[in-house]
Length: 212
Image (cartoon, rainbow, N blue to C red; front, side, top):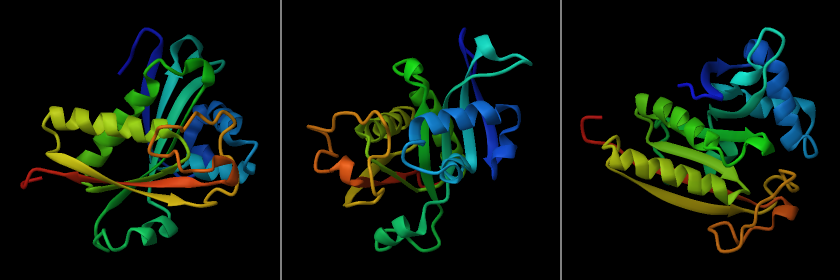
């Protein structure tokens, strides 16, 4: 999928920074610019790797000399601590996808990159008929973004319906995670104290047609 300015690319499974290939330097720089104040370099890389990674790159810089990643998203297995909080809702043998996170260059926000990368992620999830999708966030845009894609999937008859369970996790991150925390007033995350590291755990359940 290519626009006049952006290219959307799937890297598949990424187990280390080396697996990003020629995208490694730009991907790492983007991750550090977002989370570097709150975590070590090793933790940044850990948040970048997963079972499926999608990138949005700037075509104007996509040359042999260099490349600029404007946004990237990851799907991974969910942290066991988060799964335990939802054990009573999830069959122990059920497949679960965890939306590890999306980071976007501040200058590229509002251009639809997050939505397009969410489409990439959910195509992978639907291809595997995964029912349960989790994520943990301090950002209300994450909840709104996933909700929007799921409504789109219902309208396209890809799923029948979906449900959402939320749970506040006090002190989950230990500190404010991103440098540009959005306003949470009037959102499902308004009870959080992001400066104290609070997060919201989101559990989405996708309902497929009986033959899916």
